[in-house]
Image (cartoon, rainbow, N blue to C red; front, side):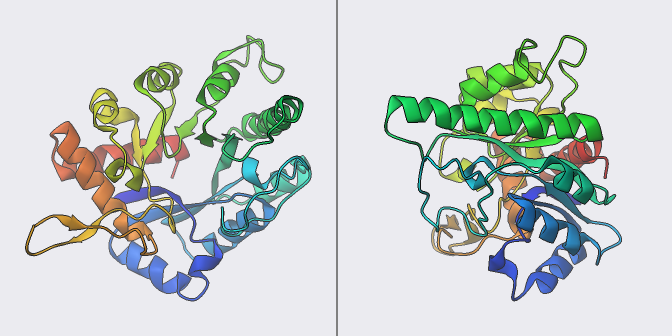
Length: 292
């Protein structure tokens, strides 16, 4: 059995065949955690879980891109299912987390890809994202839930927040209580080491076919790796070209949780482990972190 620890079957891309996709996953012994990016997609993720006794779970949170800072404009095709929120409604998300199928807070974090051009606005933009993150970390601590972190072009700031006990949301008694995964890890080895040192997992998906993370994957203990698809995005190469015997590019094909097996296969190749071993250990990792 495999666990896709980061899926978006709650997004509109799956409105027409969501039930069929989930049925195919469960029949193939693939469990799924659908991750919210705002209140609407978080609520949808929770609603989906009510149809299944096990194997389908939800994570809730406000993605930094979905925070309306009033400082930038984001292309509507940047992230499907976006519903911009001017502030984080702590109590509303807390109430949504009452479902026993909610296994994490996320995806939350920092994203500096789209940013203001002036220095003053950029500083304010970053502070607004950090303030949002700190509020969501407080919710995770209150509910004793792990966190699914999103981080793009902001690893140093995220590391500082997660490792500095003097930050506003942390004191020396609470420091280190947050558990979680750095979803879609794109940092360097030095940054990976810092996350691993404080106990976080690293999540890998189809990007490992497009960018060279071989050394980071080799150095990261398999006990600290989670596999994911981030579907409908980041489709890995699928199928095999009969002439070259290599996997074919699938950049225009919608990704699905069933493709998480290709991530496990590639990690097995990189770490010189069997597919069965990678499946077993990453499954155990997911079960331990998310208590599923």
